[in-house]
Amino acid sequence: MSESISITDNRTGQTVEIPIDNGGIDAKAWGSLLPGIWFTDPSFGATAGAVSSITDLDGGAGILRYRGYPIEQVAPSLSFLQVCYLLISGEIPTDQELAAFKAEISAEAPIHENFHKRILEGFRDDAHAMGVLISAIAALSTFFPEGKNIDDPEVRRTQMLRLIAKMPTLAASAYRKSIGAPYVQPDPELDYTSNFLTMMFCNPDGSYDVDPVLRDAMDLLFVLHADHEQNCSTTAARVVGSSHADPYVTVASAASALYGPRHGGANEAVLRMLEDIGSFDQVDDFIKSVKAGEGRLMGFGHRVYKNFDPRAVIVKETAHQVFEVTGKNPLLDIALKLEEVALADDYFVSRSLYPNVDFYSGLIYQSMGFPVEMFTVLFAIGRTPGWLTHWDEMLQQESRIARPRQIYTGPAARDVPGFTAG
Ligand code: CMC
Image 1 (cartoon, rainbow, N blue to C red):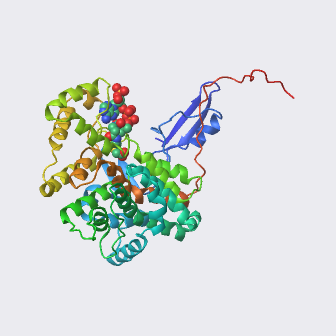
Image 2 (image 1 turned 30 degrees about the horizontal axis):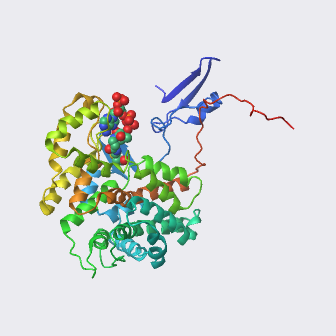
Image 3 (image 1 turned 90 degrees about the vertical axis):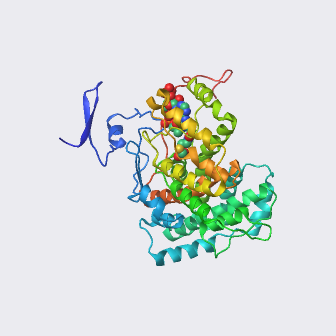
């Protein structure tokens, strides 16, 4: 049997046979048969927007692999920086490569004092940390104009490392601004995640004891968020990057897409939902209201995973390790009961709605001392290598500017009242 699909235009009887290549068919072949007829797929549910060799995801089987390595092996074995290296270069670094990579990241981590004074100081104290982060990432474009030279692989690599390095510094600065605490620059002696926790939570004299369990949990959460193939924010990065915009504004647009509650903003929305539910006894009524269409069960459901989200399984285990140190998050019981009720309810089962990565991550973040406004910022730090690797991959391929078509349903041509030609 030939590995192809045939499409027939029943108006003319003309047929085109399109080979199936790696599970996809080339839409250009369809277009040559039917010029002016477009696929309608506004949410890209049936469209492969990229040919990519970074992350392999099989939603039906609950499979997630970075460069071929299963997430269940990556999560307990590799640090976030090892995963960054793996995503960018395609291979796990040797000890020597990792040491050099760490040194490059450390060197790029500080942010210019002017950035604090002129950019961050411009925000209100109650500004949402994601709004601050998105603006700050975009502002980096004006500090590093050489990033516009996107055709040079070395320049691209430098900006990628720079962004991965500066994200924790920007994130911690956004937080410290919101609480009126002095800004802290990174300490080159510390590892990536200890550095971030220290910049976030250190005392005015810079002292802070990093708890190894909490640091490892934070690092693991960064690893779990590092890439997820063509999700909404990565697609935003690819679309914006296809215009040859610089990497800073490209990543700012990806972070903007992440901010929404259907995507990375869900971790904040879950926490607010658990707080609104308030007690164990209210869970049944809340589930009834979701089934009546009055709102969504945040942290549940996924466009691609239809049996389980492998990241959610690991996050749930991690939550218990964190609570051993911090004490149990009082909202945990509500979350566990919500999960139990939803997984036994036909509404959720028939729609294949399961806990996703955001269902338990917020409970961990809260127990570690992060305010809810920082939750999506944490997701953004983790996802930065994914956005950048996709951007870099796209630029290495023969890529045209993203420019979809539309099905026009507005008024037919008509004259402006009173208009006369000439
Ligand atoms: N609670 C209740 N009903 C839901 C939910 C939910 N969380 N998610 C989907 N549904 C229902 C939806 O109402 C629809 O029902 P019906 O067929 O009766 O109209 C059906 O399930 C299919 O929903 P959909 O909106 O077509 O699904 P989607 O694939 O377009 O959306 C989603 C995926 C993640 C946006 C959605 O499940 C959702 O809004 N979940 C809550 C937000 C959330 O947790 N997002 C984080 C996603 S994982 C982290 C990340 O990578 O971003």
